[in-house]
Amino acid sequence: MKSTMEKAGQVQRKWYVLDAAGKSVGRVAAAAASILRGKTKPTYTPHVDCGDYVIILNCDKAVFTGKKLDEKIYYRHSGWVGGLKAVSAKEMMAKRSDRAMYMAVKGMLPDTTIGRSALTRLKVYKGAEHRQQAQKPEAWTQEIK
Image 1 (cartoon, rainbow, N blue to C red):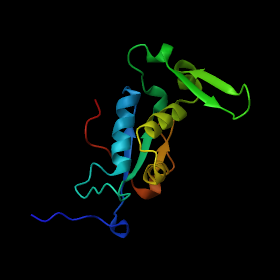
Image 2: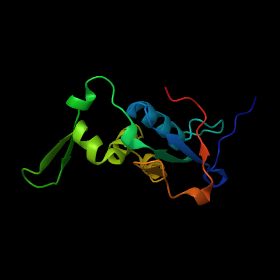
Image 3: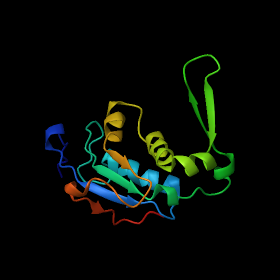
Image 4: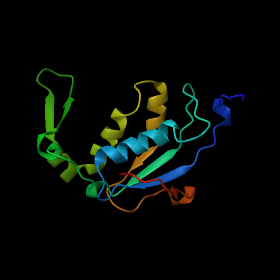
């Protein structure tokens, strides 16, 4: 049986909606990263950016399992001396839950040009409303545990 390699011009992209309400941040991020990368398609090609668009809704209702909410810390640095900032996961989920989900998905994508271009197709929202109705997104039907 002959296998085919998809070319960049042949990629057909769809829009999918993932609902994060009541689900683990890591499980939703893993599902989103897999869709963004194109691994759910039968035409997956490792060296071609063949993934789809992903919209994640209800990030403020997503949960952390175990002690992560109390012990996980997000770090960022301004580049200046003494410019290290630290924010706990509890604070991040209270103020910027969409940013916490974005960072979780970003950490699951490769640090290459393909990973960076896949990340541009991710749309994350705190609530249940989104601005991509014109693209007619489909609900992701596979189970996110």
